[in-house]
Amino acid sequence: MAVSGSTVTTSRSKKDDSSTPRLRVEAGEEDATPKLEVKEHDFFWTYTEEPHRTRRMAIIKAHPEVTKLCGPEPLTKYVVLFVVSLQILCAYLLRDTPFFSWKFFLTAYIIGATANQNLFLAIHEISHNLAFKSAAANRIIAVFANLPIGIPYSASFRPYHLTHHKSLGVDGLDTDLPTAFEAVFLDSIAGKAFFCTFQILFYALRPMMVYKVPFTGIHFFNIAVQVLFDIALVKFASGKALGYLIFSSFLAGSLHPCAGHFIAEHYVFERQPLKAKDPASMLPVPETFSYYGPLNWFTYNVGLHNEHHDFPAVPWTRLPQLNQIAKEFYDELPRHESWIYVIWQFVMDKEVGMTCRVKRKEGGRKVGAWTQQEIQA
Image: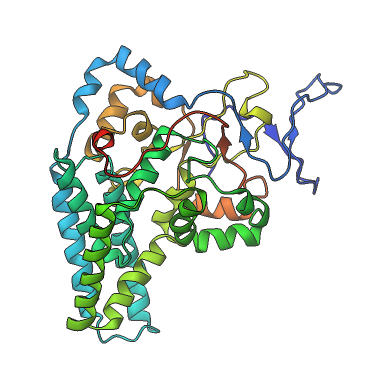
């Protein structure tokens, strides 16, 4: 999968084993001396603001009707209820099935991982208050959606994710960015394969290593409800039933087709010059990438990621409509054609790695948890 529509103008010689990217020298410019370079194990540093606010303002100016797309989607709660029920049913039916069996593994990979990835993204959707008008109702349904995941995380996810939106690419705030440790020790084929296999653990643990959010009542509620559910599942079904749910969560964030969205959303799949600018146009390098394929059907249209970052208050069911209304803003943006190939290319392509992310030193802000000012964020 190539990223189409990109303004990338950097390349590395296929015969050159050096890990230092080179700028392409066009015909007739053999004597040209590149003035920009990328340092190994360094990210793409930029001093421009994140692009989504600027594009949002431009789209609203050109198509003011897009603001009518904002607001909760009633369908979300029914999808959550169905998927939670499906996972509990599968867990109960597998209560006596050996963990080391094809029946257990295939059910967990095909049904369980897909369902739990769907619930991850339901919680993502709900974190923007897009299931109900009431903030409290959104917090409660997020805890309910968390049940088949097996480990409480919905309360902590929200402030970290909203900070990701408010502070895209900001070093020390955006916990979606790999740390410097990951950049150095995982920037190899073996390291990237390890990262893709265990990326759910990185996304779970990395935020707490960057900064801690306030521990509030909703966190206690999330933990208490999850622990009571896990205990009840073990008591009335078995430990294997709970193991199925937790294993499904692991697979959902591992080498699974739907897990490709984690990498596809913000990793830049071509080496770029210093300061994250194209040397020909001096335009900022794109840092968010969309995917318009069929896996969006299982993942709340999270593939429409430029659209989501441009308008976080537009729910999943209306993101395609947003794309159609503002087609001239989205048609030429780089995109991915396959999440499966995203994982393959990320691991195998030496041009792509942990440092292929746009970073900025300043901007943005932290978004806390369960404060009156941020309930409506």
